[in-house]
Image (cartoon, rainbow, N blue to C red):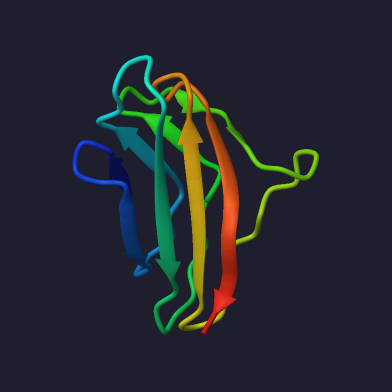
Length: 105
C-alpha cells in the first residue's frame, strides 16, 4: 500500500489481501509530518506489516513503537478495526508509531 502524504494525512484501508509493506511517498524533505492509518479487516482477515515501511526507492524506513521495541500486532478478526498514527521528524527517514486503538468492532 502506498501512503502519499502529498494527498492527505488520514488513510482508510480495508484489507482484501495481505499487506507486506507500506511505501511512504510525498514526504516534505527535512520536515516533520504525521499521518494516521485506519485498518479494517474484511470478512477474511489478512496479515498487515504495520512496522514495514519503505521509500519509493525500496529503502527500509525504521519504525519505532513505545514499549522497548515491542511491535503491535494488527487485529485479525473479521471486521475488526485498528488505528495507528505515525510521525516523522526528519522527512521520512524514520518514523515513530503509536497505537490509537485496536480491535474495534
